[in-house]
Length: 91
Image (cartoon, rainbow, N blue to C red; front, side, top):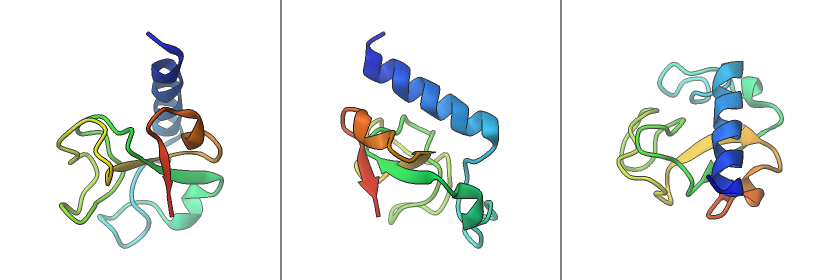
């Protein structure tokens, strides 16, 4: 496995283990925005079914239909997204 895949796998596993994944409050019953302090939304790196929240195409986490879709995103620790090939910080 190359370094980018290892970094991505580790970052996503860490986020999931900490229970930080999910939409901000009032979107799909997810956690409040304050639960995501120190995190950034990273798009373009999500694996199918592993997104953290909705897009213009759907309203729920876990609904990404393709790997690497530009509009799908996950929460990662700040500064991590730009280190992953294809990762774009979503504002």
